[in-house]
Image 1 (cartoon, rainbow, N blue to C red):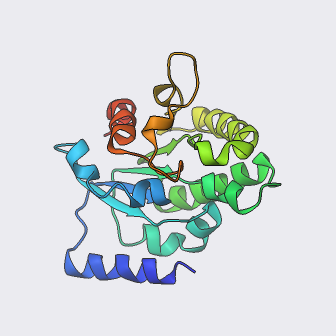
Image 2: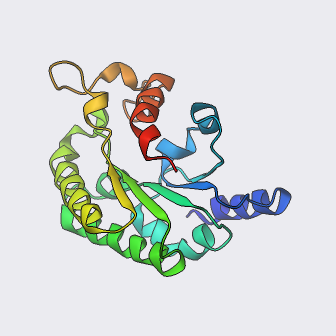
Length: 195
């Protein structure tokens, strides 16, 4: 399904060899659509390899293609939201295990670099999935706390209004993808984690 996306990445890497010691973004459309991510983090070298619609199963399936070409100093993952969207009955534990599998694959190749996971965002269009997402976030946060050179980046609070409700104005019409303001808020949280 995502074969073409992976081929496009390979082509990009052939045209411009990926810089070493970069920050590698891996995951789904919240990264894909963040085309101008480098503008948000001046002075950081960022390689964005998000591909829209991807699930953690896809990151695991394509892990060699996503990891082998690069020598990053940090990897940041945003993925998991589509796993639930694909199957509304999916248990949080399944998604947590999928992430742990991918995390292990990263660690086999890069034992000491910084690896971060951005919390699954609460998209208004996927409100029916929030309970499982909340549980997955909690469990992944717990897992990352125990790991060395690893952090859980929680973007939940910064996307809420004063009453603790998700700000719908941070989303475009589909109530799934974010506006530049949404990304600006993500940046404000991510900044302190960026190597």
